[in-house]
Image (cartoon, rainbow over all chains, first blue to last red; front, side, top):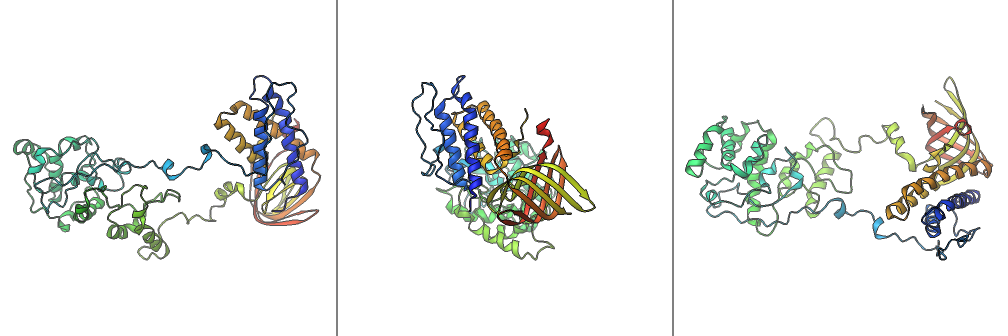
Length: 393
Length: 106
């Protein structure tokens, strides 16, 4: 970048003028002192050189050692030719800082004894936490696979239950009191199945729960035939499909249970990369793709290896989506369309800061006279004393 | 005396603001003192532009947006041409922010 010598000179003189004028506040009246002032000047000049608006090295007209009686020791002279080394505090936040590691390291319980292989819903319980899914009515209905953190370890009565984990059915009672999860789990199970048969008889089952110790399944075999659940749309289609997927997912993750965290299929779209623009709207057009391909995706941004499948799906759908009339909404939609808003963000782009003397308009012809301006255009800084503008609207 | 904080958005102003922010976060500098430095910067910058700069520039372009609010004109030009004695620059899109010069002299 070509630096106008005049610009550089003016900048340097401004810096010195400012420093000299504030020296009083720094040194007297209990201010931080001359050393801090020198540090301020040094860092400021260093940034200017780095920005390329000032030609370095800067020759100081006033030596920084003038303390005019202050008892402070000679302050160190900053060597501007040395790259500025930031301290630890100024490092850009890393992913770890932005997204604290989700505490998914809780051990996964082994399947409850007596469940057998046909307990496809048996997601192990335990004090796992899924921060992303803890918002009420979260985007994914796979909360069913995520037992609440306060839930007690599997109690003995669960061993005698039919091969259906109650956790899976938690999703169906999202609207209900969350406290029920830890306590009355059997009714939730029953709710699930009663819903599928089209009736809700929750009041019937708590009594059975207390008497027999487990609740017999009343609507048939435990296999979740898809057509059974399509009848009920009370919880939304997501939950039904989710349950369906969960079934398959459970079969898959069942052997993987030991030693890894539970992976819950994600149904609300691809996982946003922490450093990319967050996908604010769930990319519902990826729904099928995600469901079919990515079983083991947890809705947290922590691990990167499991995102392998999603970006490909995302890109594929973004380019040529023939499923609907328009491609899915993404962050590219407003490029160059919303000029006003984009203009507000162009602070680093070409910018002129000045004072105006007069602004006039005749029909669509605008004229203005400006003065004392700083222009930052084409990566250059240009100063002017006067400017005349003629614009046509 | 009120100052135009407008020049803080320039490169030199941003460098100063960043430096002061770092030092305040560091605890090296108090926020009040940082603000005093910025105000002094406003004054020094304005004065330097008046006295030390002598160049003249002409601007031509298509006016895309104009706004006058709180005594501040904001123009967004497209395909603008900036000419001064030494050279000229072509810019696809530029934003001009101008404060009322009369406010300073009141």
